[in-house]
Length: 304
Image 1 (cartoon, one colour):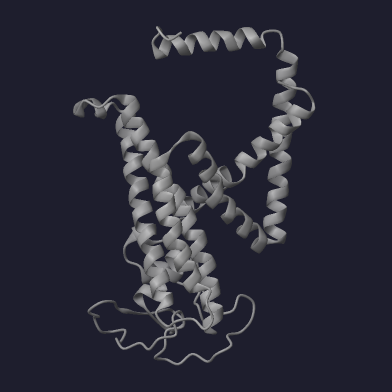
Image 2: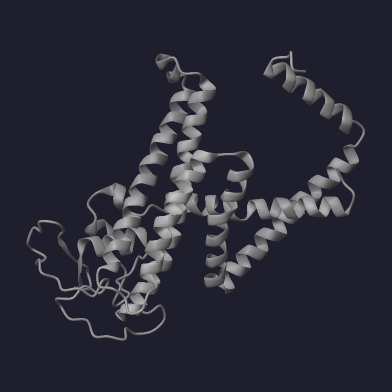
């Protein structure tokens, strides 16, 4: 085997696998049925859990999104991913710690939104570059740069996964921090009326004074006025809507007109992109658990 090329070794292993499982068609059909039934039942249970107890579902999903890739990273020796994951986890843990403190430091909301907005833009750009690399490889444009198709495809898929994975992770962490900070400040509550009265010169997201008028051009950031006439810092309302996935006013919960607020179409939350992130969240967080459950059932039934 050591004298064979990688392709020849793969063919030998493939032939051995077929020889080992020859005559077990009934067993394999039973395993396929178990897999399909488990996937259907698990999907129904997850949907019911999400509808009835969304808070616990989101917390467990976020934890699994964060931890499950770590297991495969260590097992498969993906040290580069482990380094990026460790750096992201360390900074995000510090940001989350700041966002959950009481009393809330005045500079924390802006710090949180700036960090997650930065990760959002980096992950979005990384995903776009990865997608373009995959498409260029499919059209054979990698040959113009004398790059092997497998290397170009691995590069594109890796960037695409990095962008989507950290895009999902930062949005979920940002949503959790946004809810916690807004309820701590007192201008927002998930189910009831605000616990504080909002002054016209105060931002309802961060609770800080607004010094730039809506009609003025700010040096660092501008001031936005929503259709409900409430005003906010630019970074705060962008973080609230884009990063925190909030589509309503932080104070009165009126629907936010995103097209009017953001002239750049790339900054508007996209329905298809959100659905893609939900699919990836299910793939990373729950699919390994379901596959492990299927393998456990097969082991108990003596199937191989």
